[in-house]
Image (cartoon, rainbow, N blue to C red):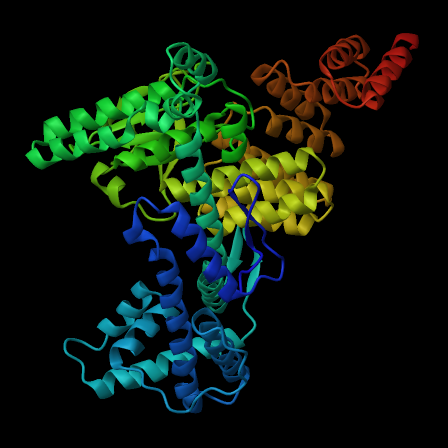
Length: 602
């Protein structure tokens, strides 16, 4: 059971302990207990997630029974062995989610699956679209016998494919992979099954995240709470009342705002409803953006304690307060920043930034379709898929440049952003194995976001696991081919493996995607220099410097290439600039100084 997992400390607050060998049914209990506290103000939702896991357990149990029923129809080959194993594992997994039963090696021979159950499971295995395409070939109103024969045929093909060795090879470009039909089917099956199996763990982590947000929303004090308490005490209020008054939730009078919005919504006047939503959102934004900014401050408990927030933390707090009032919004994942978009009842969309003033100053910008590339249907934003929607602003307010962002459901987007940030911090602390786990958690939450794959590739590359790093970069690129960093990371990994021409392709693609990033030019210069193509290397280094004159690396590479061509004076200038800008290991500045001394003697 979960005895000992949730304990109350001296202040009466619960501390969560999660042992590494936590069983599936214990995860279920954790979800139930945590959501029971988190959703105290919404009791009708307390059991919602736990019930979904319970339903998933029923699906897995039925999937095991379903496969067991059709095993006799499969050919005696490796595919049938896979089907037997999957049937047994699915059946036991389903039981463990529902009944807390011990593992069983045998599956009951008699199943009570209905035709509706079987159809749902067909779609579950093959994917809804693929299943529907195959069934349309039977024409209108197929008989039960025709459907059953089609089912048996599909299962035979499915497991025969899973039992074969798939074809997989490098594509024409270094970031591409060619896969045969068997490999593609196997990959789809792996991803679908893995996603389903990892659901309880994801939901447990999501319930803990929701608990953190609830704690933040209900316990965060106003930004000037110390002065306010002093003022209340001077007016004769007791300490308890004064403390209650400086709670941000109470200071904003969230229940009153809820009631006001509910009353306006009863009128049915969309214009008035939307105006009220915008008014309340701006009030919340003003309060949240008044907190002091601190890099890395996005842990709810620490935010309550320290009163510092960063862009992710402000999105969590501001978004949580919007949720309390019942106003729709989405999380915005963009390069180096976190924001939200507000969606009012009239279908208007506003860029909404809760970041304190020393972050972005663009707090509210109405987003119109002509500001975006392509044809974006704003009505889709209210029913956005788990993977999110990527949009590109033609010119953004801050720098008048293109801005590419992904809009995500808040719980998914914010969890991902926190996990990615955590992975980055762990890398900086040298805790790279933990960073790998964290990036993979982010991928599990949203496998259609490129950044965690890219971060995973970077840390694997640092650990010398080049082939795994290359796979991670390719995954990032397949998810979103319009982000430059994975191509750059891929180029680095390929270069270290001696695959120089492929590395050149990767760097050039990174530059093609975003010519305003200096790193790919520098990497390209290094590879060209290694290949003896000094003049081309010099051009690449100079391009890196023109993009970012404060980036130290290309000056060192430029000095190396120039010195090898006998252009000593130019090389000395490059090395001197490198020494001026470099703030890393002294080895490199000492080396550059040594090179300067040698060149001056020639």
